[in-house]
Length: 594
Image 1 (cartoon, rainbow, N blue to C red):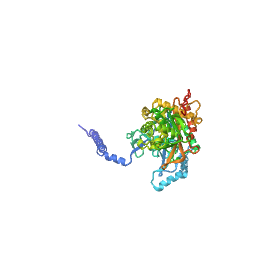
Image 2 (image 1 turned 135 degrees about the vertical axis):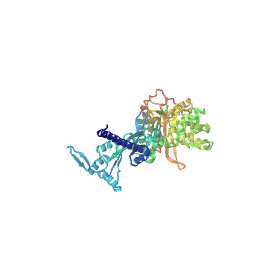
Image 3 (image 1 turned 90 degrees about the vertical axis):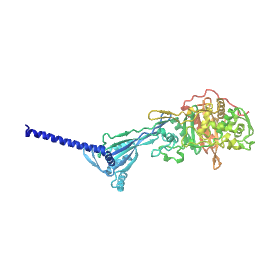
Image 4 (image 1 turned 60 degrees about the horizontal axis):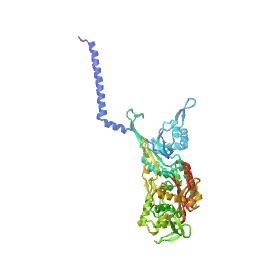
């Protein structure tokens, strides 16, 4: 028989279980409603309440380094600081005695300003201006572009109303060294010039992001983080030598200023590889402070300027004459200082002289316009044009520098009688310094033209190395025998010419040629000013390096003699830098006249 006392506990148990079950069922229904039935609505509500947060993580833009790994351009983190005007005020701190003290806002403003380079009043005004514009403002920009040291100092103040955010910035540790080559970036990180622009595909990083949800207290809700990793940019390795580049920049700056020129350039190229070891110019630009440089001086004139090469072209005409069997280094023509040819064209030499029985070598030594014209008229015009193209004139260079110019070599159907002769000595045609250096590289390299290069490789963030294989695309412009003969002729130019003592380097055989190009302006040539060039290679018996020096309108000395000192100093430094062994044989003297 069941008693009242035994029924009561059972009833209580059943009731309790029923209550628990009801609660569980209620929670389950509600959970299903939240997570399944109305899930999208609740997600939308949470996002509208600002719970979802996404922050950007920055990849690092790659570095540009020289041939030895010296960093020429790199990225650093800078910091932007902001204040919350509504929270700005005094803060409590513990003094040296362990006592809690109240530090007022003006004092704090002074501490902030001492770090950011602002006065206390300026910091206070930032906050007051923000509140005046919006009494509920939660944002006031304190400072941008702060260094890591400034960031740490501000963080040590431990202010609840100060926030700081990092952003990448570009820096150039060597200032203006190679500035015209490197280029620079805009304030928003867009590459604007030079290698920063042309190599952006390698250098550019890819930003990542972190997305998460946070509670009203600002804490991240566990399990909600989604991280998309940033990818760093690659490293661009150049062919130039930073120390040699620096030296050449100091040298050309001195020469331009001493000789009263508009600007000047020096190029150094390794003969066998076509690698550019230095490309210096003045004026130059410091990419860290581009506003300090005039707009027209912020790019590279080496790659963007064209000029009439003058008598440096005589070596190309001579090479064509020899390679086609028209002449040898000792073939002769009789030339006076001024002659009118059967075509009606008149050619005049720079120096007055009577009829001279010049050898082809003598024409180069005395730089006779009339003499080289007489050899040129023996060569078919189309043949001459084809050789000039093969030498690279009018073709630009394989460097493909941003905005790189091409010389202007008119087609044969545009050659009138005067132009036909003028081109043989570098008038009526324009070129660029890389084109001219490339032509002489072919002569110095036994007739084989190797494309010039400025970038050697790109090393991507994952270690993959992409090399520049342009050097594999060689062209045999003239025969090895022709090249050897022209090398000897150019050595005789610097041995027997008027600049012999000015360019001589003890222990080394040097070859080269000068050029004094006229400057066209408004359809005619400017009077009394010239574009001067001296280009050569050493050692002449085993060419290793080419040096070219150009000056735009030097006034202290207006002829190519202005370039002699810089050429001698530049070539001497190159031979020292690369420890080129002195010549062990004597030069062969060739006759000037027959």
